[in-house]
View 1 (cartoon, rainbow, N blue to C red):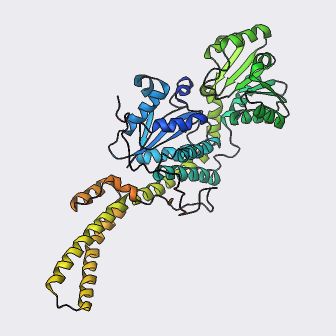
View 2 (view 1 turned 135 degrees about the horizontal axis):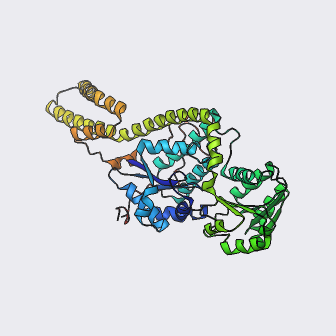
View 3 (view 1 turned 120 degrees about the vertical axis):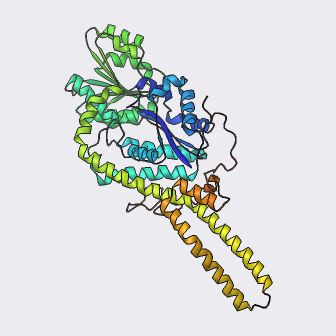
Length: 467
């Protein structure tokens, strides 16, 4: 089996391109079905700062090119336009990357909590799709555990910031004191809630929430002692605002140049700060060209996040040490499971030979008593066990694919990589935590497999090979 991750994130890719490959929460199920046409098993991790495809396939399958083809189709881009921004990891490097992501070590805002929930959501959506098997699901389950463990054992997330709170901090840097500023938050989802809360925590008292959902907007506004408006009244609200922070998750521009230009003609010389943290972007980039409009997107948060990184440097090293230990723990468990089918096949072949030869011998010795027959049976079993002891110990200690191949060829076993489907992947590796995550079960607990299809009768996948 081979594990592969292909992705783009804030470090490699501008927000304009990330917006083209971004997959919203409501689109994840359809995207997973589409991904199934490219790789047999895959999980999609999509956040405002990254889109990553995790796939588990047979050795030799072109998982990297297949995942890139999926992203190309999603973004409607040629490979030459997308490839410079893509990163890939395989096997142990892919596991390390996921554990770092879940721990907040690969985030724009180091230590942020939101990404752990997003990894869990990716897992839940994959379970719901019934298109992903236990090995890949268990990898994400364990990643969630590691992410929680890192936050419990280090100060990486102490007084943690988020992209939303950093956006408000940027507004403070630009304007100064925001206690008298009127702030308009466009979007009443999780990001909007965090923006509004961060604004209030930093002293803002005039907060208005705009959303298509009256229920969400009014509920959030009531929590903060602010007001809510419909997106239909956006122009009037922008005219009266000092700061606009947009985070809707809409697939199209919410604020276009023409609308903002009309607003600025009315405002005359009164400047307007717009911070767009949505991916895809909410604000048409041409808005930046307008006089007295100061437009920032999510990639402009770098200066604030660099300061956060320096403050957490010592905790980052502690977190990396934990991640590295957990990677080795998981990899050892994973490799040991992959060896089990080979050992099973080796022992089965040896037992078949023993039984065949013993029966032939007993036919030639009809006068043997039942007790003597039992002695012969026990003796031949002991011989087989002693002969196989060292090869089996070698496999258990080594775990390398080349060693598995060598034993397979040396003993002419009937083992193939498809034999991994017989392995019991239902138990997670031993947990270093005192209590399991909610809904996970404890150490060695079985996972409910009733909703998981193992795809034993695999169909043809037309997009496997790179075009």
